[in-house]
Length: 343
Ligand SMILES: [Zn+2]
Image (cartoon, rainbow, N blue to C red; front, side):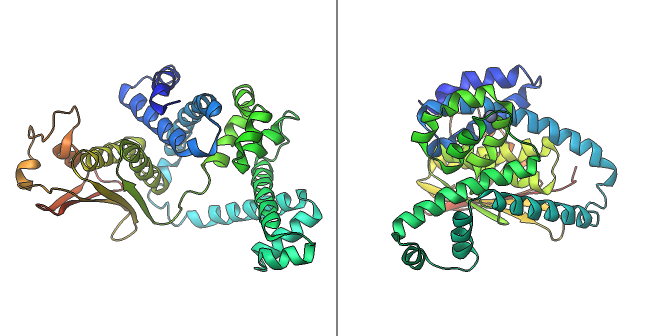
C-alpha cells in the first residue's frame, strides 16, 4: 500500500478531533512521517491500523503538549535551574524500570545479555561457553533486547497489560518480526487495545538519533517529510510552543522541497543551540544548479516553479534568521534559525 493512499483516512481522523485547519495539515504530515519511518519494521497489512493509532497518538500528544505548556508557563523563565530535581526523579524512575525489566527476563537470557552489553563479551566467546553458534547467540540477544524494551515500557507504565494477548503483540512489534506480527494479529489488536496502541509508538519508533545534531539526507519527497518531522521533534525537545513548531516545520518543508525539485541531492542538518540562547538552526545544503540571483529569489512573488508553496520568502518570514549562499553550478546552502521566545 502506498503511503499517499492513507492520506484521506488520516485526515478524517485528525479533522474529527482538531478544528484549526493549519494544525490539521500539520498533524496529518506528522502522522504520515511517523508511519513512513516505521514502514520497514511493520508488515504491510499493518500499515493502515498503524496509521490510525498513530494519528490518534499524534493528536493526543498535541493536547498533552499544549496542556504542559500552559502549566509550565509560570516557570518558563527559570526552566533551566528547575530542571535538575526533575531530571533526578526521571533518572531514578528510569533505573527502577530497567531493573524491573531485567528481573522479568529468564536467568540465562539476562546473564547472556549482561555479559554482552555490560562486560563486552563477544558473541563468539559466548557461543563457545553456551555450546551454541555465534549466529544463534546474536539472534537470541536480539530477542532478549526486544523483550527488555517491552518489559521496560511496561515497568514505566507501572501496570499490567489488560489482556493476555498484549505481551505477544508488543513483543512482535518490538522485535520488528513481521511474520510474528501477522501470527498474533497485531493489526487488529492495536485497534482494539488502547493500552498497546499507546505503547506501539515508542516500540516501533525506536532507534532515532538523540544527538544534538541530526542529519537527514534529502533526495525524494519522503525525505522532505522526514526533515520537517526531525526539525519539529528537535524544536519540541527545546520546548518551543506549538505555533513555533509549525513555523519551523513549514520552513524546513519549503526549503527541502526546493532541494528535491531542483537539485540532485542534499541534506538537512538540524542543530540545537544553547548559546547565546536557546534555539534551533537548520542548515539545508544541496549540490544543484544554484541560484543566480539570491536577492531576487528572496523577493515575494518570485517563484522558480509554479507551486502552491510559500517558497524561500515565505520560509524566511517564518524564521528569525535566514541566509542563502549560492554558487551557480555548484549548489546552495540555506541557514535558518529560530530563537526560543522571540516574537
Ligand atoms: Zn493490548
